[in-house]
Image (cartoon, rainbow, N blue to C red; front, side):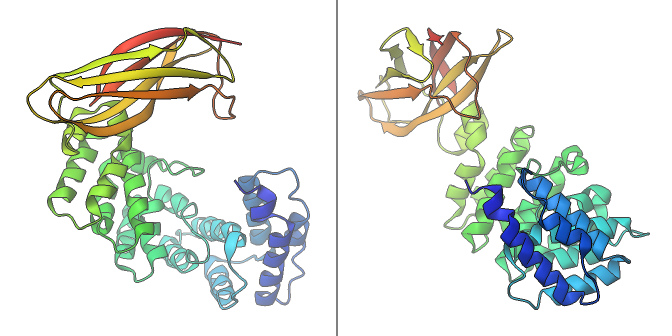
Length: 365
């Protein structure tokens, strides 16, 4: 992952100062120059907010004035990349400070800025302020000739966009963004289609039935890319063993398939080491079985409870009478996104959503 200095460091901030100086030649830009020298030790979001506040301080006035200045900056080919993030945030902040809020004008400017660097974070305060005004405008972006603008329609309205503020009205009305996705799921751009899949996957956290119904409609009117998009969109539901999602992808209940295991190489593993295990499947039925095979680690938490985490093993087709063995090694390497606690953990196999073979082992410090 690039560092904050690489994305929004002193060099990028200096480029922003030069770009703003060209559109505001009468200003010495004192706040922006101070901010550009004060980024050390700040997170990426904190850097963007600091520069955003400095822009608003050095470019006073109403929203139309700021709009004209930033549109003039678009004529500069160097006005691009991560320096655009605080610019888009300044657009939203000034628009919402206007009375009445300049939501439509701000969305138009953000659509113009997004090819330079996505405005997916900046449209969210506007959606929160007036979803009923903003969403129809965003719907028109699905027909824009620029793939970056079409992607913005999907990405900026995601329920759980990483790094982004939540949009409470969208969380309260999760079905409201489906028309945006309906307009984009057959988009010619993979960049756009991937956003659509991630957006639908976001909704699956709480709206599994809505997601399955939407995916089923798309599969009934597909293009060549739709099956892959739907598989990506349903990945969380598949890991959860959602029956309708599994059936939609062809993974019917695995009648006649016997699951043996998981068989562990040992019942103790140290933090930082690996746990080898095997799973054997046998199809005793009279027809081939299409299988989605996962395993679930039930991690011991600090409070003594266990939380499941699903890991993909494979997908396969098992002929009648066929047997197959999978060997895996699960790593307990220390990583920044997970804390391991010594004690009894559990592992089980999940085949087409049905769990079996739950086995305990001890994780040691």
